[in-house]
Length: 255
Length: 252
Image 1 (cartoon, each protein chain N blue to C red):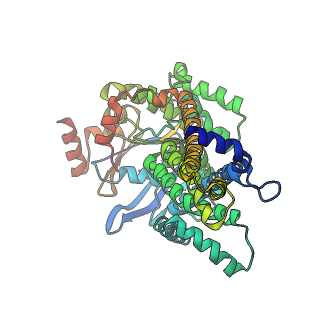
Image 2: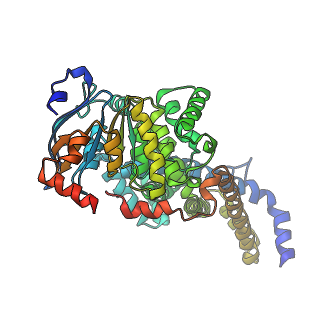
């Protein structure tokens, strides 16, 4: 934690400073301070209702915050800005949802190519060609013309990852990407995420997949009650968690 | 009876088709079709704007439109027609042709109904589609145009069709403010014949039926074409195991 907090600013892709959010009386985030460095893979874990999903959704401003700031490559995400600036900012932060949220009226390749065409103004032919390459990368080139309803959950989530990558974001956020999947489909999604991590993508993942966390994460943030109560390398976290709540969480997972 | 009707059509077909035109204003079936087409063509985009306003986070947009929609839906169309007919000239001093009074009234009235259908279609999609579009960098209007509306409008085709058909049928109320439409022409014919009201108005009913039925048939063709294009989406829905797990485990 201390090492990366003192790292030079340009290495910090994401920096959260005293981020607070509440729904009415209920405080969801109670002062989050953390940084994600370039190329780092951070896994956020913690019990249900601890604020993990809310936290990751504040990073691209799908959720507003009440106070504090979040910086993405030095830019304050929650500062007052025009719609155009916010759209540009969001287009540079890839986001993968728990429930995939593919556009059901578009085929897989159209799902991937649509936003580069409509948001970035990439020529359609070029965008489609690139979309096919991305589908190839997630192992679904032969499904390019299938519609989401014709794809399995794992396939849909891989298309969703390709769709996010199509905007060429320097960072990818994953909000429980495998929680809605049948167990036999979890692996295919995780392996795509692993290959992304291996290519040096900066990633923040909310996940319950502790195997993934152990193998891929550079750091783990353990969050409970709206606070990050432990940050550690996977090795430290799994072998010697310091905080009693993290210990309890891990022992619950084993049962 | 059938003979009477054929005779009436043979005798008065021009009046029923175009009214007094070219000696008077265009009327008859032609005017009914023009009025219907214009009403639908204007009410549809108007309704989308109303739906946007109803969904807006800005109260200044949401509240007035909500009031408009509630009032319009709670008042009989005939009252609105009469109000517009008597009040608009009184308030503006302008002499508005009854055709345009009727057109404006139909647009507001059917626009209000249609906007609720469209709003329901948008809301039914859920927040996930909008979130996904925004996360990719689409603006609100871009998300609406490329992601939300193509789905919402398609899903709402049957309900919207009923409103379109209702609009066509509601053009008959223009009769009370002397819009020279098909109903007006039929009533002129009836006034000349005096003895055959049943035959005259049966012709009228059949004509409206054919128009509305044609619109339904046309919409079905369009719907089928879209369905075929989105082949995967509307093939008989296999209950994918994913959809069950998703609902069970998804967190808010």
